[in-house]
Length: 369
Image (cartoon, rainbow, N blue to C red; front, side, top):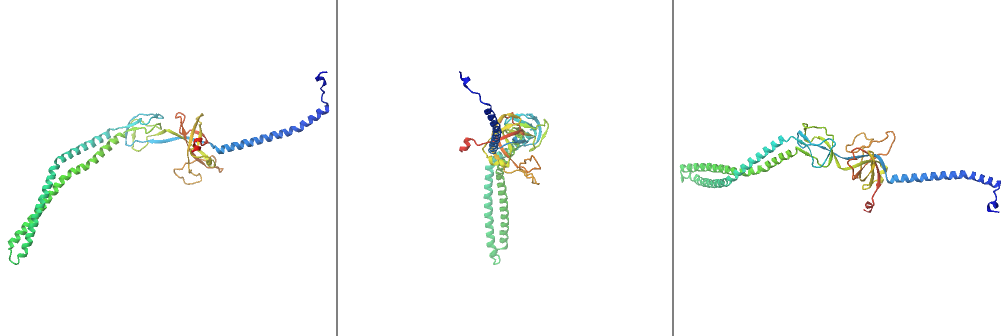
């Protein structure tokens, strides 16, 4: 006999009992699997919640760049526009020109006035030695006239007491008085000549004192002439250009906007309870909805310390305003977080593009610091 012949078939009773046991175990196995799934789901949910707490994520974010207004520093009609709307411009490129005719005339007038003043100064310098000699001569004449007057005054003072005693005649006294009056007139005349000589000498100093003002006037005129050519202050993109040649530009009035493409950042609004997990210096992961296949990295530069509360009836200028999603439900306030983008692609980034941002945390090098 072979082995297959020696094996006995299980009897009918054993088969029935095994079938009953399997029916009892099936509900237990189902309950166990269900509990396992619930526990696993709970663990996964807890892990996801913990991950979201440690790495906040928001789609309430927009790409931003600094925007300035290009305004001329002088007024005048624009004679040439060298750029087009939406054009990328390099720093130092000529943007537009204002008619320089009036400013060139101002420069010519200032140069002529300075040249005339320099000629007057040269003439005054040649006369300076002679004028100084005249001053010295006038000073000597004043000293001499003063001495003679003083002597005549002393003579009169000596004669007047002698008149009542008949030691001096009235004629002598009158002559002394007349001589004193004449000498006082000579002193006055000598002082007048001295003053005139001093004024003539001081003319050179006056002319020399006027020269810095004329030089400054010429510099101002030349500077205003240079302002008729407006250049790009940095690498950027022209925005909102809607002018042509002939447009009258006013000093200090914006002609068009200029987008600073050197530095891009994202303003991401995070709920206030998520701010505890965000610190300046943390890295962030950014995706733009305009190009969701590209991943960009950024660094948290700062968190806004204040926002405009929607419960306030008075607007506080300068504070960012973050609109709530729902008006009838009390939700957490959002605060803007500024994230600077590393190596932004100027062909992808546009101001106002929606972004999805996730805070990744500190890098290892930052942790060491």
